Image 1 (cartoon, rainbow, N blue to C red):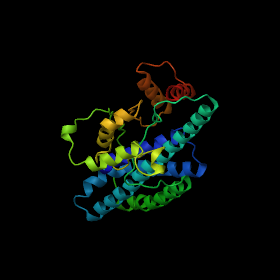
Image 2: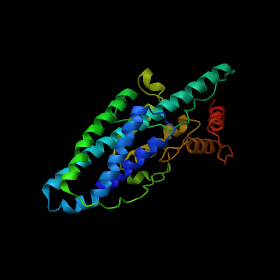
Image 3: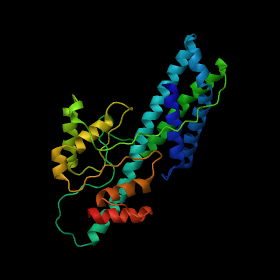
Image 4: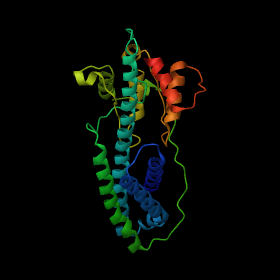
Amino acid sequence: MAGALLSAIVERLGSFISSEFKLTVTVKEEVQELETKFRTIQAVLNDAEKRQLKEEDVKLWLDKLEGVSYEIDYMLDEWNTVMIKAEIEKQQKEFEEKEKAETSTAKKRKVWPLISYFNFSVPNLLPHRDIAHKIQELNENLDETYKEREMYGFELSRPIQEVIERPKTTSYVDVSEILGRDKVKNDLVSALLGKGTEKDKHPHVISLVGMGGIGKTTLAQLAYNDQEVQAHFEIKVWVCVSNPFDQCKVAKEILESIERRSSNLTALQSLLDRICDKVG
């Protein structure tokens, strides 16, 4: 468990460093420091996992490492959602400004065709400065575990250079195999259809977050295939987001899903302009 979790975190940290998201110098340095610490810990992890069977203090060290790792993984989920939300709001603002400049005609309501998430566990996303503070705090928490590795004299080994590829998903789901998700699915559908308060009627981002394996994708599939959702929206798009996040790839898949044919566009701006034309 610890090895797979650390590998995933190292990959995600590397993705954020190399992504197009703008990071302040301080935040970038903190993220790079986190990545370096995790890579160093990876080099002793094999020995630590062998010794935990006989040495209780090593087991406690691994438990503490796993706890900090889950906190960092959770923070990365939230950070990713904040960054995507900011990008979506930027593109939507540009779209709305363009729409105001043109003569609008009454059309059937269409959903903004960028990835949406439904958030059950994080009702309020942290502002950018709070995320930066959280990164620094988690870096300090990891520092204690990082330093403690030296006193155990772990044997170094080469970290496994394994690329953890995110599983590809589709919108198809076998409803007959899903049990006990009706309430949470109905809540998600209500949010998508704008049922509830006036604030809920025009969501920018609906986010679903949590550790792997709890059923986020299945829930999204159930909502996507709901009869009310299918009938309500003229345009519906399912896109599997790549890791690392590639804006051009996501935009291209959205456009191709809308047009139901391949596109020869490669520039992000051109892709977004075409998407705006299709949903305007």
